[in-house]
Length: 66
Image (cartoon, rainbow, N blue to C red; front, side, top):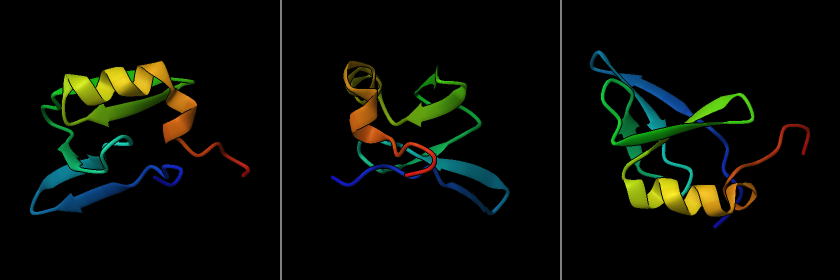
C-alpha cells in the first residue's frame, strides 16, 4: 500500500475522511475510531484499523515535505 495522503470529502451534507489503513471512507459525525498523531486527527473504520495504525503509524502516513 502506498503512503497515505489525508483527504476530506463533502457530499450530501456529510463529511468524510479516508481511513489511512484500509482507505475506506469514514463519516466524521460519528467515526468508529479516531486518534490524534503529531497534531493531526486520523479517523478509522474500526478499532482494528486504529490499532494497526498505532503500531506503525509511519507505514500509513505520508510525511509533509516528501
